[in-house]
Image (cartoon, rainbow, N blue to C red; front, side, top):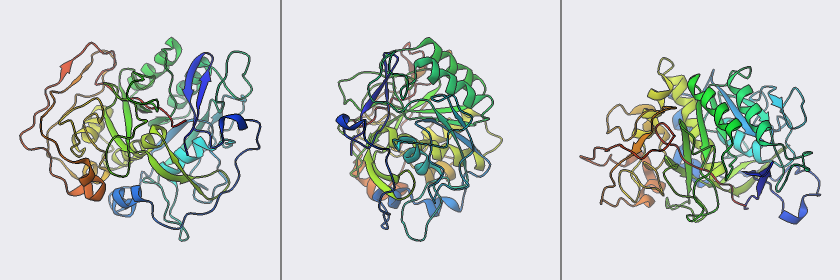
Length: 386
């Protein structure tokens, strides 16, 4: 299922909506069948193996999205009240379109005896921040759309009163917004780790925001074969990639199969939550270094616009101390990011089959070159399949 794109006050915000473009008047998404098998992405990421190291316990993760349906059996007890800036209500625990619920489930859904679907960080607390659920909206379509100001409000609240330590943003804007950029800068300056999707309009679409802002970790998507998904946008805003064709929690109950960088992003967010629990004394910069230096090699060498620094490997992130540091820490002001590309091709399919066993590229030292990007250490973009 591809998810359409939502426009916020003239700025495009990708929101995965599990209904056709012409069916916006249809009823809210209801319960779906339960998926009993273990999806391919979870066979690779092995959440049961991660649980022996960390579960994300004590870490608050804000999901700035379409809300989160707290009724889902695997999310009960995992979702705080949050805030609804779309309806100006004091709770974000409703989700008509299912996008935010799917994202939250990838992060924190608990294990269920009847299903192979679960989150990577089931001990984390989801803080839902509802800002948009519309596909194409403008200034006159505010009932389900929101605006850039609403988006910024939600980010600022998450990093402040929401007490989030990590913020997941599976929404994108094709144009910049001073309000959103300011809110992101404040969150990063406060030590909050922000993870954002790289966009779903393919390799020719260019950069998107907020993934391209300083200090944001930008996430692209790969398919089950470990190769870049055709819809995943490319560029310097991509810091790493994760599986984007996945099975997620649906509103009310059950699961659905979706695709997009929106759904690759929460795998990275969940890994950050695990790292926050396992290394509680480390700064946001140190956590980010652990994340980026533990990735598995991808086509393009040490750094490429398609794969960033490589393929997410949660187990290595939690266990490895050695390996080249391939990226600088997030910084709101400076932007050291690009590394010299290596000619060595390591098949990404190996990662899909067993990424935890891949060796770090021997002798590769990332040469970080400032390219004038405003992004600190350069994050990635997200685009939602639409």
